[in-house]
Image 1: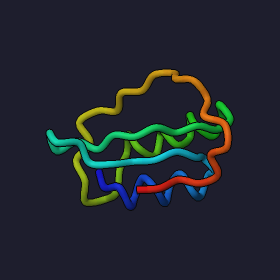
Image 2: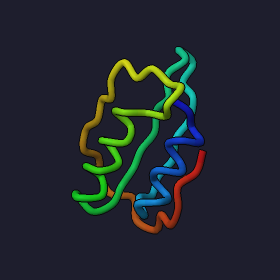
Image 3: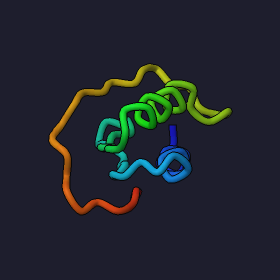
Image 4: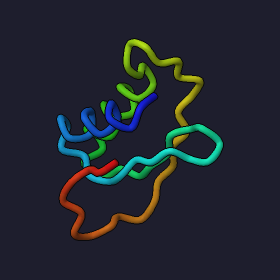
Length: 73
């Protein structure tokens, strides 16, 4: 999965947070928004872009970060 795909999906849904490449080659990040939008976002991540192979999506709840106003990569 790519950072740009993740950012585009988040921005289209109004989800805030960030995404980055991890040293092990995976993509990781944080996202926040309404539950319905986060569920839709995770669904997009599980499918990934057409050229990607997604082996899994792990997610957990974290504390809300006040003042976030976008999604960066």
